Length: 470
Image (tube, rainbow, N blue to C red; front, side, top):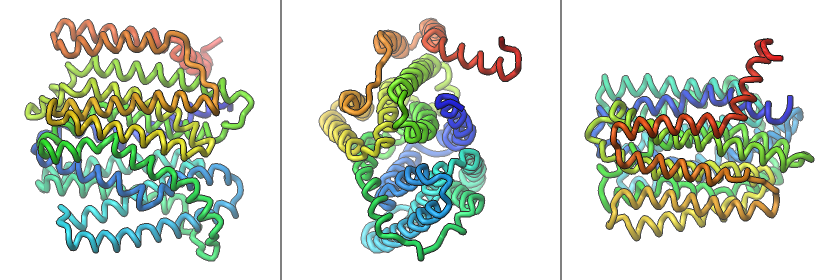
């Protein structure tokens, strides 16, 4: 199987699983916005924001390291067991130290849902690590099944705790924690990870080597947190939790793009790691980057064209203000597509320090723009700071990566995307029913035309599979 087909196969398998976790949660928006006040939803969003910050710090980004090292050890059972034993040792040590520190700190600082938050952090850490282990093993089907379990558990638990038990914010966080616990338990049993724990195989050299790879990713993870969600902290401090609830709803729509990108990026990072030293590497990477940019630009612009029709159906009236900020956040999500494509190449070449340094630049820009303008233009400052930070990171990585890989962007591609994007956003803000219909038609035509080669190749492949092709 050639490199591109393998990438597509892995992406499809992962998509089938991850769609349950991330995209199905999007369709819970009517439940969240209907049963939770803007303040309640804002509190939950803020707590989850801090969980996403804490987990990579607790683990020293161990999950990324174990994935990369397991890819290299495929087919070597003894080496795999050695890596996994050291992985469990570092994971257990990190969680123990953090738990003691958390209990001490929470004795002096009031933390809402104190014990639930600790439980949530622990199970998120375990599920995140085991998911990357399954990818490192090449077990994409088990990865997808675990994601389906997470998604179904989240949906069922949310309905029970929020609708029937009326637990509000507590119920939403509880549901997320239980879903991650089920994910971790499934992978621990299915992959027989309990057979790979042998502390006699603890090796200082392996621990140092894995940490040398992963620790530079910590500032990258923290910086991504700042770029992605520090907005919530500033909004809550300056404008209040209710505004954070509105902003969180705005972010749910570009999160669809981020979720799909994350799904693609899982298989892309594996494929990049496997083929980073191939003779046709530059051609392969250029092909994937151009194809991905076309597909995701069509998705972003298509979402802007569809939102005037979809938003009133999904979102409760008390969150209507969220409509204003979505296009700017979608624009940022499009910049993030290119950033993540480049990140996959950095990580494949084990250039984690470069990943961290470029992310820090984006984080600083995000904070500065937020602080300067949040009081003047409100939530627009948060949306703009994210888009500007992503744009800066994208340009920096594009220039920096030229030192290592020669990626060629198709002629006029960026111009085509910008023209249609500006047209679509302009009609979005005018928000006239007839112009909305025109916008929708234009973006559909754009999506088909810009991706015609990909659609033709995919169609030919399907026909061939059905034995109907030439």
